[in-house]
Image: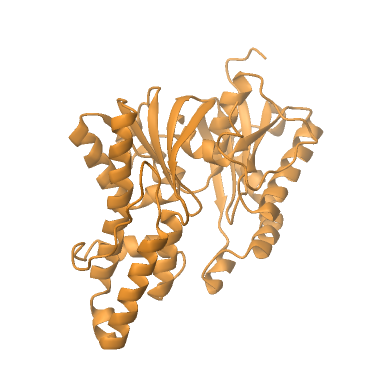
Amino acid sequence: MNKDTIHILAIESSCDDTSAAVLANDRVLALVNASQAVHREFGGVVPELASRSHQKSIMPTVQAAIEQSGISLTTLDAIAFTRGPGLLGSLLVGTHFAKSLAWSLGIPLIGVNHMEGHILAHFIRGDASAHQSSPNLTEPPSYPFLNLTVSGGHTQLVWVTSPFSFEVVGETLDDSAGETFDKVAKLLNLPYPGGPEIDRLAKTGNPHAFEFARPQIPDLNYSFSGLKTSIRYTLETLEREDPERLRRELPDICASVQNRIIEILTDKTNLALERYPTEHITLSGGVSANSGLRSAFLNLAAARGIRAHVPPMAYCTDNAAMIGMAGYFQFREGLFDPLHTTVDARMSLQSGSF
């Protein structure tokens, strides 16, 4: 299809946020997110409640995105949606809605790998308000580049040579970095979601006040289970010996936890750059919003004399704009999905690549 401007409606529903976006090529016209506060009282995402909330939110969220974009449904050229990975029930809501709307409008359907979306969010252009927090993203990275994805479900180092070529060169063998942040926050009785709360408290703490275990994992893989155990034992000892000290030194604890996680992430990234030399490194995933990690990532790149790309805050956590960006790349190559396509809750990065 030869058109100068391709309009894509994108839908993201892989976990607990319902998101819809409208893109004109690689420019975001509208992005609307509906969060699910219902999970806070449980201290984590409850899959059944998540899928029910998506059912309630998806229609008004898509409608709001279309209205804010200033275009009509008949202007759309395709519907992009998250096909996986994610929570099965949540994915099904977004997928069925996308399939129904694409069929009714008679336009192509584009299934997107959620993890590819995070990486390709670095190619979104033209949204000045979103990019104010990350002026280094005025230009996208050049291929090939090394990407560090850090989220609640994934921690991966990915070698990217094109919008359709992703090689996972290192990943966590157990827990993800994002999961570690959240579980430690729960041990500290911090409100959900715990990762941002640890980041906030860490800003006034001493990152060297407590020493936690440093996992010795060969090659480019990660492991965080041993670190979590080390942190838990330290907190139990503090609680037993002096509960007031634990509360008094909470910022120091958070700063030390965050510092250790960031050290693990950046050390592996540094090692990966020895094996995969490049002029560009990118950071993606929900934990890329962490201020300490963003700063360390930029410092790592500066020390090596290369370019670092950190995403605008609007594109850090799960959002439909990144799904639309990946969908746009697929649209240009004519890579569409049939209406009988199914979700893949355990979709790997490789299986989602073309």
